[in-house]
Length: 262
Image 1: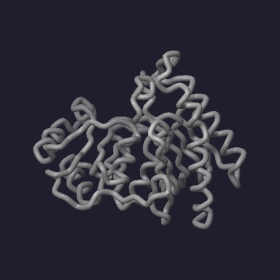
Image 2: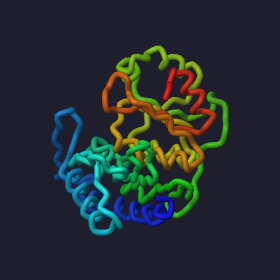
Image 3: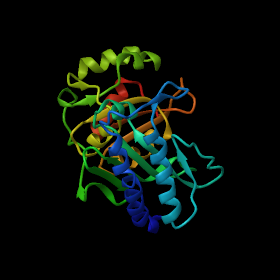
């Protein structure tokens, strides 16, 4: 599999970019309509059609018939050792509100080890493609990127969810501990925040209750940029994951403050 990674990375970049023009045709379009899924999240025709297009692109160009797990169309990947994981529009709410932080996420992962081998975040509204594969580094539009250098947590920009998410996770007190140590807290959104950690603009992102398609691509991107991707199964939400994506020293400090054990 290692020998295939360069070609799989190239394929993943092309597949993630494939529906970009179509997605942008709906962005800030007055005719755009949205509906709610059973979990309350927002979905549009552009989400479903973009995933269909990515699946078709992969089926046509991939060297083997690996299955696909996607947010909108699911996918029974069965006992497959490897699979693609796709979120056609991560940040659909932002997409429907005219905010540019949405993006397409695509990963190729080893299911047995639950380890992404290739990951791509494409941000159509910004014209940026973040990509990585194990041992090949992390890149944005052909330029090598790296996570932030070591700095005191008091100087770090850290993105966290709203306080009530800490309460839902049963660690409300950790929110106060983090606030006391890190004065530059933000609440950045969607895969854009993950990309900003990979390029060193944001020191850390904390998120709760993510699906595999929310985190797989970011996992390899962050680690190949020199950072750490701490991911655990959410103890209060079966089938979901909590994560800390950060530069190495900040990851350890934030994990300690949040009592975050992988």
